[in-house]
Length: 311
Image (cartoon, rainbow, N blue to C red):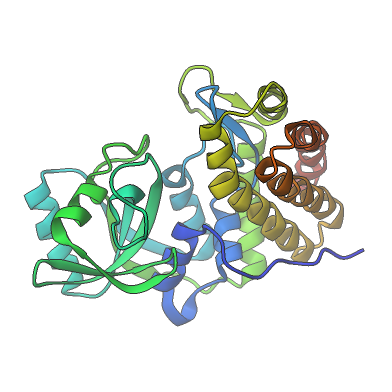
């Protein structure tokens, strides 16, 4: 049975932001997400916070490989003082839109309910500075949103984001070669396999677990009684993005003829997506059972992909 893809909204902030910067030459956000390596694994960050992305992975860790696989390059600037960052942003905007992030989502007060830092990362495309406001396309669902400059700078400082550097922005997006989507998927696959194999020279926070070990630890934690903070993180973000990543990756693998591996990723997508209702309904025993079924799929996927990459 062929995998039936998902089309719809979801928390794909950096993939959507990249797509905006690429313009008419953009690959689809699903291929951009695949190219970052995000679908290839699961981690329990610091032994506490679950993410359906690889052990030690952060968006920043996946961006350069993704751009290269897709045939693009950009200029990245980071750090410095607030005044220096604002001057860089103004210079960049003189030439066109600027890709900005990570930012702390809780300071983006144009989003309802945001009143201060919540420890959530996000990416936006800045469009203009005028009258003490920043105009942006926020891929959370807010085109041409405006925000007071003080709030934008607090978000961009990212003091509660646990990766990257303050005031990171990208300009000078340039297509260096035309890469069809199927070729971009093939080029990105070796990096994805390295993420899945946890074959990266990274030092995540102490206690971080990956793949099967991480999933089983999360299952036991939920079976013992899921606390409200963990439940909120899962049902509002982690499950939604994790299921979509796996679903998009399954479709990408099908497009390059890796049907068996796509079947495993499709199973991952269904198991992750199936967590949503029991977690919302507080049926933690069922959620834990879904996670236990998910656990061995990372090992199965790696066993299928490694020979495919070597051929």
